[in-house]
Image (cartoon, rainbow, N blue to C red; front, side, top):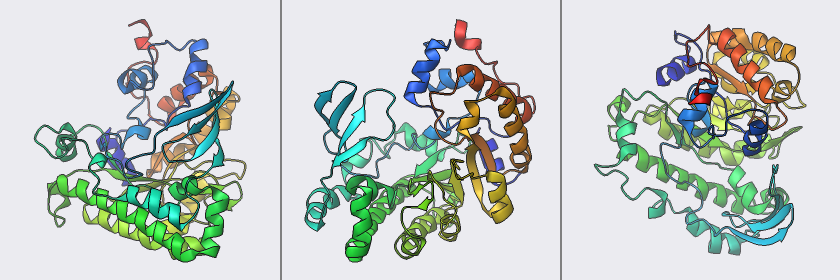
Length: 395
């Protein structure tokens, strides 16, 4: 899996394209049980789950092997404050009070925020962004018994590991709410810049420790940790474009993205993706300029994003993952097959790993998804010889 990932992301020869997926709503699996999915197939057991479906490494968990925390530390206590039947009011671990559905929920409704001004920032949030906090790292991190570090430095590791790259805007938007943060950008840009800088300092501090723990001099990135990629998260776009203007993005975020990507490049990490939903067109060139070279999961949406058009526009400089319209998966098998074939030339060219443009939602029938996997195995995988799907159902 690791060799195949590297070859694909660097346009090198390989036996076939990776066959994988971003992941699935928890509710999707529950619905699929009623449609015939064996109940021993659960998302938390990667081996069983991915062998049953006949796919490769779980891209969503590529950074789980690192096992560190770059966000708020310690997190706030998560508390259910009120039961409203199908909904509940809760304080999340980021300090935000939300109204959320107990089942089939997507984005919870924000009711109240603890981060509202400079005073609450300095009292409740800035102290939680200390990169040296011991809770960010496993107790045995770097010790002789640390299996994580052994996997980091193993040149023959069969699976890819992605470093966590944090979030410069998305976390702040979560903590303050979109409307409040949008006003801050204009009313107090110095404070906005302070928050972005503090978050970036925390991310860089954690990454530096991981890279130093893994060993190897910066001049010889092959001599220490062997990290295959770095994954950031932002979700800073909606169906009409970015939530932060490109002008502010370039002014406030690009310099700190460059700090992060420069550090990664210094240690030999050259595949750096950002997970951003929505219409990302206006931000792609700015991310590329800042060293973030892979878009994930290339959400198609009502705005009609298309990984083929992105490749035509940006060439091989832009790496991509995702881009298979989730809505097609919920429709007919004929449409599924047509889209698999349409994307096949891009898959074969490399620099692109195709899968659903977000978590597979519960309106996708299990039968359709199984057909999709059989088709991509045949078309993108060139008849790969993986364990047949469903073989584990009787075990």
